[in-house]
Each structure stands twice: as C-alpha cells, then as structure tokens.
Amino acid sequence: MGAGCLLFLVWARLGWGRDKSIPAIAVTISMVVLGLAFFLPVAFAVPATIAAVLATLILLLALRERTWAYGLLTNQRLVWIGLISYSLYLWHWGVIALSRLSIGIHWWTIPFQCLLIVVLSVFSYRFIEVPFRKPRPSLRDVHCIAIGIMALILAAVLLVGIGKGLGSKMYLGKFKAEDFVYVQSKMPCELMSIKLDRSQWSTCLDRSNKEPYVFVLGDSHASNLVPSVQSAAVQTSFAGVRYLTNAMAHPFHTKDTIAAANFWNNSQVYQRFIQNLQPKDVIVYSRRVPETKEGFLGVQNQIQQLSNDALPRIAAIVLMDDIPHTCSEEDFKRSFLLTGGRGCRVSKSLILANRAPLSKILQNFARDNSRIAYLDPLPLLCEKDSCFPTLDGNLLFVDTSPHFSLSNPAPLATFLRDGFRSHGLVVPSSSG
Image 1 (spheres, rainbow, N blue to C red):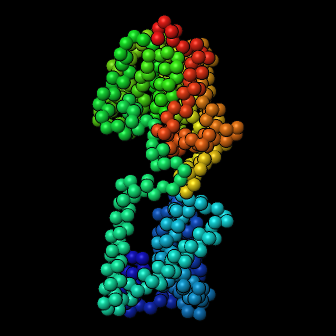
Image 2 (cartoon, one colour):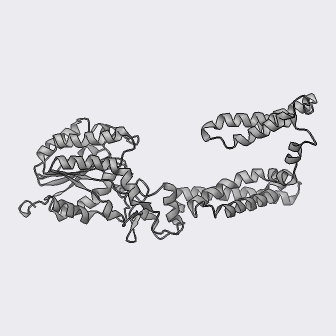
C-alpha cells in the first residue's frame, strides 16, 4: 500500500502517465509473479511479499487500455471483490477461527463458511465502511459516530470480561469450567503449579518418621499420579506419599525454585533424599514422552541414577509408562466447546507408536532388575482401540499434554493399588 501511494504521488507531482516504454510482456510477467507469490510456502514470506510489491508497481506502470489484463482487472465482478476486499480481510479470520473451535473446517463446511464471510463483508462494507468513507455532516452522522464509539467501548469491556473469567461462565458444555483445572494446580511440591508459595520445595521429600513411604519423582505427568498414589498407598499400608515433580531444567522455574533444576545433579536435596531412604520405601517414577533424543537420554540417566543410588536402600522402583495423549489442542477445544461430549478420539495404535521408545526404555530396566516394576496405565484409560479425554462419562484430561482433571484426580488409584500388590509392595500390618 505504501509503495502504491508513493507511486501515485510521483505521478501526480511529475505529471507522469503510464510508461509506454515498458513492454507489454511485463504485464503478463507481473500477473504470473503475483499469482505465484500467493502460493509460496510461509518460509518464503519476505521474498514473496517483495516480489508481489514490485510486480504490482510494474503492473500499475505498464497496464494499458484495450489489453487483456486491463479488461480482466476492470471486470465488474473483480472490481466488486476489490471494493469489499478490506471487509473480507477483516471478517475472514474471525469466521475461520471460530469455525476451527466449533464445527471445524471440512470440505462440506467450506462453502457455507465462505458464504458467511462474504455476507458479513458486504454488510460491513455497505453500512459501515462506505458511510464513514463518504461522510455527510449532519446530526444523524454525529449520532452514528457516538453509537460506533459506544460499540467499541462495549466490545472492549466484553473482551476484558472474557479474559478475566467471564468466558468460563459462558461455557455451555456438559462439564463445568472448574472441571478443566489441572490436578496439580494446588500441589505445593509440583514446582510448576500455580501455588504461589513454593519457597519450601527443598523439604518436599523429607519424611516425618521411619515408616515406609512412597516417593514420586518425574515431571508434571508424575504429578498426575500423586492423588492416585496417595489412595493406593493408604490401601497398601504405607505411611504416606512424598513427591517432588518438575525438579529438572525448566523455563518456568521461579527464583525460589531455580535451584531445583540441579536436583538430579547430586544436589544437597538429592543427597538428603537418598540418605533418608528406608528399606521398605518405594519410588514411583514417571515422565512424559520426550520430544528429543536428549530427552530420552535424560530419562535413561535418571532411572539409572535411581537404580545406582536408591535401589540398594529401598524395596522397589515402579516405572509408570506415560498416559495417552489425545489429539491436537485445536481438536480438543472444539470437542468440548459446544457439546461437552466425550472429546476427540485418537487411535490407540498411534499412541502406542508415539511412546514406543519410552516404553522400551522402561521395560528394559524392569527386565534387567527384578526390583524394578513396570506399569502401563494405557489399557485402563483407553477403550478397545481408541483413547478419549473422557472415560465412563467422567473427564480425564483438561488439556492435550495431558494433565488429569482436579474433578477426577485419582483415576488410577485402584490400578496402582493392584500393581503394588502384584509386585509384593505391601507393608505388613505389623509395620502399618
């Protein structure tokens, strides 16, 4: 737009007309370049934009009457599209974004979505853009401007209200807004939780007595397990559960917990934890499927470290495989936004393939050491061949990480209790 304005000003100042010295073929080349520029990958956005601007300038300079390009560009239908183009620009993304969050974008919805974009654009062009571009000073126009200002203020208040929590009250789905809260949101020893006071994180693994305890280590997916482990620990006569999760390098550590990134680097907290372990203790370790080779290496190193340092002092280490991931964030939101139904579906075979490298690492450790147990919660959390964010009508996950819902905090309690018992990890009644 800026280049076009400058070109117009040069024409007006110097009295230029279209440059007839530019060959007619330049028009065709410019049209082709403009067409190609729209289909280049996003990685070429900058050169595509520069090419489009230069091609447009050449087109403006070289275009002549009674040529095919002039006839095409002055066609009434194309001119009409050009007139409403700014309104099309304003409306198209809103319709697309809301569609993706609600009914989705499919081959059969695209005609209706395009029609809605055009209808909204024509309406705003006719009744908003044109009146403001061609003002006729009158008392009625003053009223119109006042109404417009009030509408802007109301829209701003509404947007702020939605951002401050009003949006949760507008949710019409099956589940309540409170259901979509992380189970770890109130955990003081989950270092990435929203609890403000995390300054005492270094005491999270301390014990109050020498009775057998279950210790939970890992990332936020280990935090997912804490309520279930607590329930299972009670039923198998352990004295309690201690946990320290996300004690690893993480960009969201606060000034109070930044030292937690050194937990696995033989820190004082780690040393104190190891020295205070008792013969009947159990460690539960769980991690999300890593996204890099370095992440998988980190999992191996941490389990090996626990095997070397902790296993000689305790009863067993329980390695919990990752819980199922369910679809993309976009599909997850859409599946709950309007209907609040069972949520988006993901093939169990796809989930198994995604976490296969992690499963192999955990299974290998369990195979090589009889005091390392491997538990897989996926069969419990999925149906025969599909996994959903819900199970038996209850919400499991609040996001696609995924994290368990605070309204259903311990879906694996029975599974873990039975897993402990099957591996002999039950405290004798005389010790309970």
